[in-house]
Image (tube, rainbow, N blue to C red; front, top):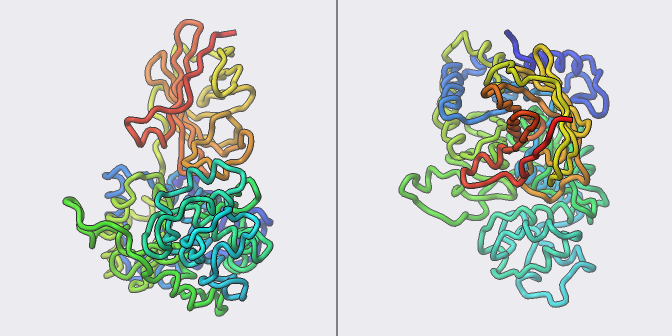
Length: 514
Protein backbone atom coordinates (compact mmCIF):
# COMPACT_ATOMS: atom_id res chain seq x y z
CA UNK A 1 0.00 0.00 0.00
CA UNK A 2 1.28 3.48 -0.87
CA UNK A 3 2.29 5.47 2.23
CA UNK A 4 0.95 8.92 3.04
CA UNK A 5 4.18 10.66 1.98
CA UNK A 6 3.94 9.15 -1.48
CA UNK A 7 0.23 9.98 -1.76
CA UNK A 8 1.04 13.55 -0.73
CA UNK A 9 3.72 13.63 -3.40
CA UNK A 10 1.27 12.60 -6.12
CA UNK A 11 -1.11 15.30 -4.93
CA UNK A 12 1.74 17.79 -4.90
CA UNK A 13 2.71 16.88 -8.47
CA UNK A 14 -0.87 17.32 -9.62
CA UNK A 15 -1.37 20.69 -7.95
CA UNK A 16 1.99 22.10 -8.95
CA UNK A 17 1.50 21.01 -12.55
CA UNK A 18 -1.73 22.99 -12.58
CA UNK A 19 0.01 25.95 -10.97
CA UNK A 20 -2.42 26.01 -8.05
CA UNK A 21 -0.02 26.42 -5.16
CA UNK A 22 0.22 29.95 -3.81
CA UNK A 23 3.10 32.04 -2.46
CA UNK A 24 3.63 29.80 0.60
CA UNK A 25 3.11 26.56 -1.28
CA UNK A 26 5.58 24.34 -3.05
CA UNK A 27 5.17 25.72 -6.53
CA UNK A 28 3.99 28.93 -8.14
CA UNK A 29 4.01 28.07 -11.83
CA UNK A 30 3.51 25.04 -14.08
CA UNK A 31 6.48 22.79 -14.67
CA UNK A 32 8.30 23.89 -11.52
CA UNK A 33 9.27 20.35 -10.55
CA UNK A 34 12.47 18.79 -11.77
CA UNK A 35 11.93 16.39 -14.67
CA UNK A 36 11.48 12.76 -13.69
CA UNK A 37 13.07 9.66 -15.14
CA UNK A 38 13.99 6.15 -14.06
CA UNK A 39 17.20 4.66 -12.77
CA UNK A 40 17.40 2.21 -15.64
CA UNK A 41 16.92 4.95 -18.24
CA UNK A 42 19.80 6.83 -16.60
CA UNK A 43 22.04 3.75 -16.57
CA UNK A 44 21.88 3.37 -12.79
CA UNK A 45 21.58 0.03 -11.02
CA UNK A 46 18.37 -0.41 -9.07
CA UNK A 47 20.14 -3.24 -7.26
CA UNK A 48 22.68 -0.75 -5.92
CA UNK A 49 19.90 1.53 -4.71
CA UNK A 50 18.14 -1.38 -3.03
CA UNK A 51 21.43 -2.42 -1.40
CA UNK A 52 21.81 1.13 -0.05
CA UNK A 53 18.31 1.05 1.46
CA UNK A 54 19.05 -2.34 3.02
CA UNK A 55 22.34 -1.08 4.43
CA UNK A 56 20.65 2.00 5.90
CA UNK A 57 18.18 -0.25 7.69
CA UNK A 58 20.90 -2.60 8.94
CA UNK A 59 23.01 0.29 10.24
CA UNK A 60 19.91 1.80 11.91
CA UNK A 61 20.50 5.13 10.19
CA UNK A 62 17.33 7.18 10.28
CA UNK A 63 16.72 8.76 6.88
CA UNK A 64 13.85 11.16 6.30
CA UNK A 65 14.22 11.64 2.55
CA UNK A 66 16.37 10.51 -0.35
CA UNK A 67 16.54 11.96 -3.85
CA UNK A 68 18.98 10.98 -6.59
CA UNK A 69 19.38 12.91 -9.85
CA UNK A 70 21.26 11.94 -12.96
CA UNK A 71 21.56 13.84 -16.22
CA UNK A 72 19.22 16.47 -14.76
CA UNK A 73 16.36 14.11 -13.92
CA UNK A 74 15.12 12.75 -10.60
CA UNK A 75 15.55 8.98 -10.87
CA UNK A 76 14.99 7.98 -7.22
CA UNK A 77 12.93 9.66 -4.54
CA UNK A 78 11.46 8.58 -1.25
CA UNK A 79 10.28 9.99 2.07
CA UNK A 80 10.04 8.04 5.28
CA UNK A 81 6.54 8.67 6.59
CA UNK A 82 5.58 10.94 8.41
CA UNK A 83 8.09 13.08 6.45
CA UNK A 84 6.95 14.10 2.99
CA UNK A 85 7.91 16.10 -0.13
CA UNK A 86 5.57 18.98 0.63
CA UNK A 87 7.19 19.72 4.01
CA UNK A 88 10.30 21.77 4.68
CA UNK A 89 13.08 20.26 6.80
CA UNK A 90 15.60 21.96 9.08
CA UNK A 91 18.96 22.12 7.31
CA UNK A 92 21.35 23.04 10.11
CA UNK A 93 24.76 23.76 8.52
CA UNK A 94 23.57 22.88 5.01
CA UNK A 95 22.37 26.49 5.30
CA UNK A 96 25.98 27.65 5.01
CA UNK A 97 26.22 26.72 1.33
CA UNK A 98 23.22 28.93 0.55
CA UNK A 99 24.81 31.83 2.48
CA UNK A 100 27.98 31.35 0.46
CA UNK A 101 25.90 31.61 -2.72
CA UNK A 102 24.39 34.87 -1.48
CA UNK A 103 27.91 36.24 -0.99
CA UNK A 104 28.82 35.15 -4.51
CA UNK A 105 25.82 36.92 -6.00
CA UNK A 106 26.63 40.09 -4.06
CA UNK A 107 30.21 39.89 -5.33
CA UNK A 108 28.92 39.53 -8.88
CA UNK A 109 26.79 42.65 -8.40
CA UNK A 110 29.83 44.62 -7.25
CA UNK A 111 28.61 45.12 -3.70
CA UNK A 112 31.70 43.60 -2.07
CA UNK A 113 34.76 41.45 -2.72
CA UNK A 114 36.15 38.51 -0.79
CA UNK A 115 39.27 40.60 -0.14
CA UNK A 116 37.32 43.24 1.82
CA UNK A 117 38.17 43.64 5.50
CA UNK A 118 35.41 42.40 7.80
CA UNK A 119 35.78 45.41 10.08
CA UNK A 120 35.07 47.77 7.17
CA UNK A 121 31.40 46.77 7.17
CA UNK A 122 30.71 47.41 10.85
CA UNK A 123 32.27 50.69 12.02
CA UNK A 124 29.70 51.05 14.83
CA UNK A 125 30.33 47.60 16.31
CA UNK A 126 34.11 47.50 16.58
CA UNK A 127 35.96 46.86 19.85
CA UNK A 128 37.86 49.73 21.41
CA UNK A 129 41.16 48.18 20.38
CA UNK A 130 41.44 46.51 16.97
CA UNK A 131 44.16 43.87 16.91
CA UNK A 132 46.30 43.28 13.86
CA UNK A 133 44.67 39.91 13.33
CA UNK A 134 41.16 41.35 13.50
CA UNK A 135 42.15 44.06 11.04
CA UNK A 136 43.56 41.39 8.71
CA UNK A 137 40.38 39.31 8.71
CA UNK A 138 38.74 39.31 5.26
CA UNK A 139 35.47 38.01 3.87
CA UNK A 140 37.31 35.06 2.33
CA UNK A 141 38.49 34.03 5.80
CA UNK A 142 34.92 33.88 7.02
CA UNK A 143 34.01 31.76 4.00
CA UNK A 144 36.87 29.29 4.52
CA UNK A 145 36.45 28.98 8.32
CA UNK A 146 39.86 30.58 8.91
CA UNK A 147 39.05 33.88 10.69
CA UNK A 148 41.62 33.15 13.41
CA UNK A 149 39.53 32.26 16.47
CA UNK A 150 41.16 30.03 19.07
CA UNK A 151 37.83 28.34 19.87
CA UNK A 152 34.49 28.12 18.08
CA UNK A 153 32.71 31.25 19.40
CA UNK A 154 29.08 30.46 18.48
CA UNK A 155 28.02 29.60 22.04
CA UNK A 156 29.26 32.93 23.37
CA UNK A 157 27.87 34.97 20.50
CA UNK A 158 24.30 33.67 20.35
CA UNK A 159 23.71 34.42 24.01
CA UNK A 160 23.91 38.16 23.33
CA UNK A 161 21.70 40.71 21.61
CA UNK A 162 24.27 42.08 19.15
CA UNK A 163 25.96 39.08 17.56
CA UNK A 164 28.14 41.15 15.24
CA UNK A 165 29.61 43.18 18.08
CA UNK A 166 30.21 40.08 20.20
CA UNK A 167 31.93 38.25 17.35
CA UNK A 168 34.24 41.18 16.64
CA UNK A 169 35.09 41.41 20.35
CA UNK A 170 36.42 37.82 20.47
CA UNK A 171 40.17 37.33 20.65
CA UNK A 172 41.61 36.55 17.23
CA UNK A 173 44.56 34.42 18.28
CA UNK A 174 45.76 33.28 14.87
CA UNK A 175 46.59 35.06 11.68
CA UNK A 176 43.47 34.84 9.50
CA UNK A 177 43.80 32.33 6.69
CA UNK A 178 46.16 30.00 8.55
CA UNK A 179 44.07 27.74 10.81
CA UNK A 180 40.80 26.00 9.96
CA UNK A 181 38.32 25.85 12.81
CA UNK A 182 34.66 25.13 12.19
CA UNK A 183 32.90 28.38 12.96
CA UNK A 184 29.15 28.80 12.48
CA UNK A 185 29.05 32.47 13.45
CA UNK A 186 31.69 33.20 10.84
CA UNK A 187 28.93 32.26 8.39
CA UNK A 188 26.51 34.45 10.34
CA UNK A 189 28.94 37.31 9.73
CA UNK A 190 28.72 36.59 5.99
CA UNK A 191 24.94 36.90 6.32
CA UNK A 192 25.34 40.16 8.22
CA UNK A 193 27.67 41.51 5.52
CA UNK A 194 25.22 40.63 2.74
CA UNK A 195 22.46 42.39 4.65
CA UNK A 196 24.70 45.40 5.24
CA UNK A 197 25.56 45.87 1.57
CA UNK A 198 22.18 44.96 0.07
CA UNK A 199 19.71 46.17 2.69
CA UNK A 200 18.03 42.76 2.60
CA UNK A 201 18.25 39.59 4.64
CA UNK A 202 19.96 36.68 2.93
CA UNK A 203 16.56 35.03 2.52
CA UNK A 204 15.01 38.09 0.88
CA UNK A 205 18.11 38.68 -1.24
CA UNK A 206 18.22 35.09 -2.49
CA UNK A 207 14.49 34.80 -3.19
CA UNK A 208 14.38 36.61 -6.57
CA UNK A 209 17.94 35.65 -7.52
CA UNK A 210 18.01 31.95 -6.60
CA UNK A 211 14.82 30.53 -5.15
CA UNK A 212 12.32 31.95 -7.62
CA UNK A 213 14.31 31.06 -10.76
CA UNK A 214 14.63 27.50 -9.44
CA UNK A 215 10.93 27.33 -8.55
CA UNK A 216 11.55 27.00 -4.81
CA UNK A 217 9.15 28.53 -2.30
CA UNK A 218 7.93 27.96 1.25
CA UNK A 219 11.48 28.20 2.67
CA UNK A 220 12.15 29.84 6.03
CA UNK A 221 15.27 31.12 7.77
CA UNK A 222 15.81 31.89 11.44
CA UNK A 223 17.15 35.28 12.49
CA UNK A 224 19.17 36.82 15.31
CA UNK A 225 17.63 39.35 17.71
CA UNK A 226 18.54 42.16 15.27
CA UNK A 227 16.75 40.55 12.33
CA UNK A 228 19.77 39.14 10.49
CA UNK A 229 19.37 35.60 9.16
CA UNK A 230 21.52 33.19 11.16
CA UNK A 231 23.44 32.22 8.02
CA UNK A 232 25.33 29.24 9.40
CA UNK A 233 22.14 27.39 10.31
CA UNK A 234 18.39 27.96 10.47
CA UNK A 235 17.26 27.44 6.86
CA UNK A 236 14.27 25.15 6.32
CA UNK A 237 13.56 23.97 2.79
CA UNK A 238 12.02 20.99 0.98
CA UNK A 239 14.08 18.07 -0.28
CA UNK A 240 13.37 19.04 -3.88
CA UNK A 241 14.74 22.51 -3.16
CA UNK A 242 18.03 20.91 -2.09
CA UNK A 243 18.02 18.79 -5.23
CA UNK A 244 17.54 21.84 -7.45
CA UNK A 245 20.35 23.65 -5.65
CA UNK A 246 22.64 20.66 -6.18
CA UNK A 247 21.72 20.44 -9.85
CA UNK A 248 22.41 24.16 -10.25
CA UNK A 249 25.89 23.65 -8.78
CA UNK A 250 26.47 20.65 -11.04
CA UNK A 251 25.56 22.87 -14.01
CA UNK A 252 28.05 25.55 -12.88
CA UNK A 253 25.29 27.98 -11.93
CA UNK A 254 23.27 27.66 -15.12
CA UNK A 255 19.52 27.00 -15.08
CA UNK A 256 17.30 26.58 -18.11
CA UNK A 257 19.74 28.44 -20.32
CA UNK A 258 20.33 31.32 -17.90
CA UNK A 259 23.37 31.92 -15.73
CA UNK A 260 21.78 32.21 -12.27
CA UNK A 261 25.06 32.10 -10.34
CA UNK A 262 28.36 32.98 -12.02
CA UNK A 263 30.22 29.84 -13.10
CA UNK A 264 33.44 31.34 -11.77
CA UNK A 265 31.90 31.65 -8.31
CA UNK A 266 30.68 28.04 -8.31
CA UNK A 267 34.19 26.92 -9.27
CA UNK A 268 35.79 29.14 -6.62
CA UNK A 269 33.34 28.21 -3.86
CA UNK A 270 33.55 24.45 -4.35
CA UNK A 271 37.30 24.03 -4.92
CA UNK A 272 39.91 23.18 -2.27
CA UNK A 273 40.94 26.27 -0.29
CA UNK A 274 42.14 25.03 3.09
CA UNK A 275 43.08 21.75 4.72
CA UNK A 276 41.32 20.76 7.92
CA UNK A 277 43.57 19.60 10.78
CA UNK A 278 43.88 15.85 11.32
CA UNK A 279 45.42 12.79 9.76
CA UNK A 280 45.26 9.03 9.73
CA UNK A 281 43.51 7.31 12.64
CA UNK A 282 43.71 3.64 13.63
CA UNK A 283 40.18 3.01 12.40
CA UNK A 284 40.14 5.38 9.42
CA UNK A 285 42.88 6.70 7.10
CA UNK A 286 42.74 10.35 6.17
CA UNK A 287 41.95 9.47 2.54
CA UNK A 288 38.67 7.88 3.69
CA UNK A 289 37.65 10.73 6.00
CA UNK A 290 35.20 13.08 4.28
CA UNK A 291 35.92 15.83 6.79
CA UNK A 292 39.62 15.90 5.87
CA UNK A 293 39.44 16.34 2.09
CA UNK A 294 39.63 20.13 2.11
CA UNK A 295 37.17 23.00 2.50
CA UNK A 296 36.00 25.67 0.07
CA UNK A 297 33.67 28.60 0.56
CA UNK A 298 31.19 26.86 2.88
CA UNK A 299 31.41 23.64 0.89
CA UNK A 300 33.21 20.42 1.81
CA UNK A 301 35.35 18.44 -0.59
CA UNK A 302 34.61 14.69 -0.60
CA UNK A 303 36.61 11.62 -1.45
CA UNK A 304 37.30 11.63 -5.19
CA UNK A 305 36.02 14.61 -7.18
CA UNK A 306 32.72 15.11 -5.37
CA UNK A 307 31.82 18.05 -3.12
CA UNK A 308 28.94 18.68 -0.79
CA UNK A 309 27.05 20.95 1.52
CA UNK A 310 26.06 19.27 4.76
CA UNK A 311 24.31 19.89 8.04
CA UNK A 312 24.18 18.22 11.44
CA UNK A 313 22.50 14.82 11.64
CA UNK A 314 22.88 14.12 7.93
CA UNK A 315 21.40 16.90 5.82
CA UNK A 316 23.36 16.35 2.60
CA UNK A 317 23.58 17.78 -0.90
CA UNK A 318 26.29 15.75 -2.64
CA UNK A 319 27.39 16.80 -6.12
CA UNK A 320 29.13 14.15 -8.25
CA UNK A 321 30.56 15.80 -11.40
CA UNK A 322 32.11 12.61 -12.79
CA UNK A 323 28.76 10.82 -12.61
CA UNK A 324 26.68 13.86 -13.66
CA UNK A 325 24.64 13.22 -10.54
CA UNK A 326 23.33 14.72 -7.31
CA UNK A 327 22.40 12.86 -4.13
CA UNK A 328 20.25 14.56 -1.49
CA UNK A 329 19.41 13.20 1.95
CA UNK A 330 17.71 14.52 5.07
CA UNK A 331 17.94 12.53 8.28
CA UNK A 332 18.64 12.33 11.99
CA UNK A 333 21.86 10.42 12.29
CA UNK A 334 24.84 11.10 14.53
CA UNK A 335 27.21 8.97 12.39
CA UNK A 336 27.40 11.18 9.32
CA UNK A 337 30.62 9.56 8.09
CA UNK A 338 28.93 6.17 8.30
CA UNK A 339 26.08 7.55 6.22
CA UNK A 340 28.51 8.77 3.57
CA UNK A 341 30.38 5.46 3.67
CA UNK A 342 27.17 3.72 2.57
CA UNK A 343 26.77 6.22 -0.27
CA UNK A 344 30.29 5.45 -1.52
CA UNK A 345 29.85 1.71 -0.97
CA UNK A 346 26.47 1.27 -2.67
CA UNK A 347 25.28 4.33 -4.60
CA UNK A 348 28.53 5.36 -6.27
CA UNK A 349 29.03 1.92 -7.94
CA UNK A 350 25.36 1.96 -8.95
CA UNK A 351 26.17 4.65 -11.52
CA UNK A 352 28.39 2.20 -13.39
CA UNK A 353 25.64 -0.01 -14.82
CA UNK A 354 21.96 -0.83 -14.81
CA UNK A 355 20.41 -3.81 -13.00
CA UNK A 356 16.66 -3.97 -12.60
CA UNK A 357 14.95 -4.74 -9.29
CA UNK A 358 11.16 -4.78 -9.78
CA UNK A 359 10.56 -4.40 -6.03
CA UNK A 360 12.35 -1.04 -5.78
CA UNK A 361 9.33 1.11 -6.64
CA UNK A 362 7.21 -0.59 -4.00
CA UNK A 363 10.04 -0.25 -1.47
CA UNK A 364 10.25 3.48 -2.06
CA UNK A 365 6.47 3.83 -1.82
CA UNK A 366 6.34 2.05 1.52
CA UNK A 367 9.13 3.87 3.39
CA UNK A 368 8.13 4.63 6.96
CA UNK A 369 9.63 5.36 10.34
CA UNK A 370 8.07 2.81 12.66
CA UNK A 371 5.27 4.15 14.89
CA UNK A 372 5.48 3.62 18.64
CA UNK A 373 5.40 -0.04 19.61
CA UNK A 374 3.01 -1.36 22.24
CA UNK A 375 -0.52 -2.38 23.08
CA UNK A 376 -3.41 -0.30 21.78
CA UNK A 377 -5.26 -0.32 25.09
CA UNK A 378 -4.91 -0.90 28.82
CA UNK A 379 -7.15 -0.96 31.89
CA UNK A 380 -5.66 2.48 32.64
CA UNK A 381 -6.88 3.87 29.31
CA UNK A 382 -9.51 6.03 30.98
CA UNK A 383 -10.32 9.59 29.96
CA UNK A 384 -8.93 11.76 32.74
CA UNK A 385 -7.60 15.23 33.50
CA UNK A 386 -4.67 15.76 35.85
CA UNK A 387 -3.61 18.87 37.75
CA UNK A 388 0.17 19.10 37.75
CA UNK A 389 2.56 20.13 40.45
CA UNK A 390 4.63 23.21 39.69
CA UNK A 391 7.10 22.33 36.93
CA UNK A 392 9.82 23.94 34.81
CA UNK A 393 7.63 23.97 31.68
CA UNK A 394 4.84 25.88 33.41
CA UNK A 395 2.19 23.35 32.38
CA UNK A 396 -0.75 23.31 34.81
CA UNK A 397 -3.03 20.56 33.52
CA UNK A 398 -2.89 17.62 31.16
CA UNK A 399 -5.63 15.34 29.95
CA UNK A 400 -5.88 12.00 28.15
CA UNK A 401 -8.77 11.26 25.81
CA UNK A 402 -8.80 7.69 24.51
CA UNK A 403 -10.74 6.81 21.40
CA UNK A 404 -10.89 3.66 19.23
CA UNK A 405 -7.63 4.09 17.34
CA UNK A 406 -6.19 7.27 18.77
CA UNK A 407 -5.28 9.26 21.86
CA UNK A 408 -5.91 12.96 22.28
CA UNK A 409 -3.39 14.37 24.74
CA UNK A 410 -3.74 17.97 25.91
CA UNK A 411 -1.32 20.15 27.86
CA UNK A 412 -3.05 23.34 28.95
CA UNK A 413 -5.30 22.98 25.93
CA UNK A 414 -2.49 22.31 23.43
CA UNK A 415 -3.62 19.17 21.67
CA UNK A 416 -1.43 16.36 20.33
CA UNK A 417 -3.35 13.56 18.61
CA UNK A 418 -1.56 10.20 18.56
CA UNK A 419 -2.40 7.18 16.45
CA UNK A 420 -2.08 3.69 17.87
CA UNK A 421 0.14 1.89 15.39
CA UNK A 422 0.07 4.88 13.03
CA UNK A 423 1.28 8.46 12.69
CA UNK A 424 -1.28 11.26 12.94
CA UNK A 425 -0.22 14.74 11.90
CA UNK A 426 -1.25 17.93 13.65
CA UNK A 427 0.06 21.19 15.11
CA UNK A 428 0.62 22.18 18.73
CA UNK A 429 2.56 24.63 20.88
CA UNK A 430 3.65 22.47 23.82
CA UNK A 431 6.10 24.17 26.22
CA UNK A 432 9.60 22.75 26.02
CA UNK A 433 9.24 21.66 22.39
CA UNK A 434 10.64 21.11 19.82
CA UNK A 435 14.20 19.96 20.67
CA UNK A 436 16.92 22.31 19.40
CA UNK A 437 20.64 21.81 18.90
CA UNK A 438 21.42 25.52 19.13
CA UNK A 439 19.51 28.26 20.93
CA UNK A 440 20.49 31.10 18.61
CA UNK A 441 17.67 32.08 16.29
CA UNK A 442 14.98 30.38 18.36
CA UNK A 443 11.60 32.11 18.06
CA UNK A 444 10.30 33.90 21.14
CA UNK A 445 7.63 32.17 23.17
CA UNK A 446 6.44 28.63 22.50
CA UNK A 447 6.47 27.93 18.75
CA UNK A 448 3.66 26.10 17.02
CA UNK A 449 5.20 22.90 15.70
CA UNK A 450 4.00 20.42 13.14
CA UNK A 451 3.87 17.14 15.04
CA UNK A 452 3.25 13.60 13.84
CA UNK A 453 2.44 11.48 16.86
CA UNK A 454 1.89 7.84 17.71
CA UNK A 455 1.33 6.02 21.00
CA UNK A 456 1.43 2.57 22.55
CA UNK A 457 1.12 0.93 25.96
CA UNK A 458 4.48 -0.48 27.08
CA UNK A 459 2.61 -2.24 29.88
CA UNK A 460 -0.71 -1.71 31.60
CA UNK A 461 0.61 1.28 33.54
CA UNK A 462 3.01 2.83 31.03
CA UNK A 463 1.87 4.81 28.01
CA UNK A 464 4.54 5.97 25.56
CA UNK A 465 3.98 8.71 22.99
CA UNK A 466 6.40 9.60 20.20
CA UNK A 467 6.15 13.14 18.88
CA UNK A 468 7.97 13.68 15.60
CA UNK A 469 8.51 17.32 14.69
CA UNK A 470 8.49 16.48 11.02
CA UNK A 471 9.81 19.81 9.78
CA UNK A 472 12.91 19.17 11.88
CA UNK A 473 15.11 16.09 12.25
CA UNK A 474 14.01 15.60 15.86
CA UNK A 475 11.47 13.84 18.05
CA UNK A 476 10.42 13.41 21.66
CA UNK A 477 9.63 10.24 23.56
CA UNK A 478 7.01 11.08 26.18
CA UNK A 479 6.52 8.41 28.86
CA UNK A 480 3.44 8.53 31.09
CA UNK A 481 3.43 6.30 34.19
CA UNK A 482 0.02 5.86 35.82
CA UNK A 483 -0.23 4.83 39.45
CA UNK A 484 -3.63 5.01 41.13
CA UNK A 485 -4.90 8.55 40.61
CA UNK A 486 -1.46 9.91 39.78
CA UNK A 487 0.65 10.28 36.64
CA UNK A 488 4.33 11.02 36.04
CA UNK A 489 5.25 12.37 32.61
CA UNK A 490 8.88 12.32 31.50
CA UNK A 491 10.56 13.49 28.30
CA UNK A 492 13.48 12.17 26.27
CA UNK A 493 14.40 14.06 23.12
CA UNK A 494 16.09 12.32 20.22
CA UNK A 495 18.99 14.72 20.70
CA UNK A 496 19.47 13.59 24.30
CA UNK A 497 18.99 9.93 23.38
CA UNK A 498 22.04 10.14 21.08
CA UNK A 499 24.24 10.68 24.14
CA UNK A 500 23.81 7.86 26.67
CA UNK A 501 25.42 10.01 29.38
CA UNK A 502 23.10 12.96 28.84
CA UNK A 503 19.89 13.66 30.73
CA UNK A 504 16.94 15.53 29.28
CA UNK A 505 16.82 19.07 30.64
CA UNK A 506 13.07 18.85 31.17
CA UNK A 507 12.25 17.44 34.58
CA UNK A 508 9.37 14.99 34.93
CA UNK A 509 5.89 16.45 35.49
CA UNK A 510 3.80 14.94 38.29
CA UNK A 511 0.03 15.23 38.57
CA UNK A 512 -3.09 13.97 40.30
CA UNK A 513 -6.47 13.26 38.72
CA UNK A 514 -8.99 16.07 39.07
